[in-house]
Amino acid sequence: MIKKIRGFFGGVFGIFKKRKSIKLGIYGHPNAGKSTIANRISKDWLGEEFTKASAVPHETREIIVKEKITVKSKGKELTFNLVDTPGIATKIDYEDFLKYKINPKEAKERAKEATKGVIEAIKWLDEMDCVLVVLDSTQNPYSQVNITIIGNLAARNIPVLIVANKIDLKKADIKRVEAAFPQYSTIAVSALKGENMESFYDALFKLVK
Image 1 (cartoon, rainbow, N blue to C red):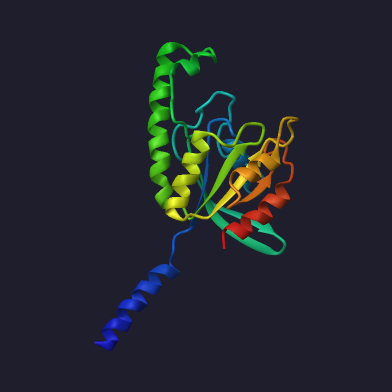
Image 2: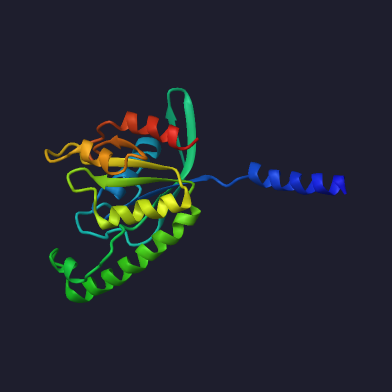
């Protein structure tokens, strides 16, 4: 019996040793800069773009995964699968797309796809090992969307790093972002301009332990 028990636990521990690659998810509201962050990481370490970034909301409407990204910092290496998710929104109206000169038929289809994407993004939380929550540092962080995202992550006890993006803009207010969710570490960056990315990667190593 003892041998069987040892064999059982040995098999369980073996499974953990063969754990799949770490999944690092990127979450946030539309146009916070999630895809820009994903592109910055991919360009820095793979030399290629991750996905298309756009000023049009919900440009990313499905889960996109880039596997085996290896980041190096201060003599250490970290390999993970990066998961870019659709922007989380509490309401998606096709009329929002009309402002960007998208025809009504395409706008309705985009709204439908974006709604489906939000549902998938929430489902994928159960697959994540850790998450970057990207916030636009020029906007009020106390939004219903941000509170919903943080609440879902807290309920699952998933490690989180708050990324206060767009610090290159005059209206950026990092202290307001830090005060909004003090239970998590906040790192300020400009993904578009590559500002403070070295500190971002240092914070990433602390997140993925």
